[in-house]
Length: 351
Image (cartoon, rainbow, N blue to C red; front, top):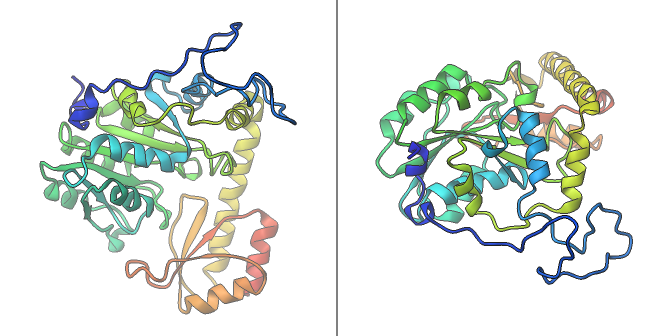
């Protein structure tokens, strides 16, 4: 048995997934209690009066090609946020199995753990090392009840990437004992993507991907959970059928067409260039004490007066994200990288 499968909740390991109505091309569908007529204005391919596939097989194949994995190693989710929920519910029994988070990081890890009733263990990032995880502390504090650790790389909201060697050390140290979830929501904006190698080297690593950032599909809510083929069906058992809407699948499939690849790369390159321009310009402002290095599509600033900084931007109708409430992020403001005109508007508000 795959060591990751052994960490799945015992009550789920042999669970029989819900059996949906069969769908076959060319057949009259009188087995799913659907309406035989399309709704007004419906221009979708199969018709919105029909349920989508229980699992979007064509979309799965397209995303697998996009991310360079076999189809059996990918589960489509509604954004990578749903994948966080799926992982926690698959591996953690309420009140028993722990989740490790490394703040300051994406808050949804804690939220979904709390919803599941999974105990939380917080092991802070090391600010003095540029907000890197303390691998030694994670391994030292791991117990027989600990199941999952989330590593966000590039990390939200700090923007820094975690070296692949550090994740390798964590996965090796937790082999047979724990699941390392690498949240790679912002990896397209980084200098390199270590996740294919991590998946190849370790059978206890799962990777979260999203099309909300680099692929400009935040309104569609499409993500993917990548991992060993032995675990994907069990993760899928946690999801109900028909979760991915027909129109959303069609929108993603259009964006994944090969003819768009050059445009995606052009946009990523432009955002990386704008990230550098903003970092340099903002770093010269008297109000800004520090610009943290970033490999994401945002910058984390440390400013002297966060509320005045926010107010100056808001006066020009620019919204920024306040993180100064977090003791681990003193004076912190997160700035998303916009297009050149949007970034100029921000700079005009602050200069």
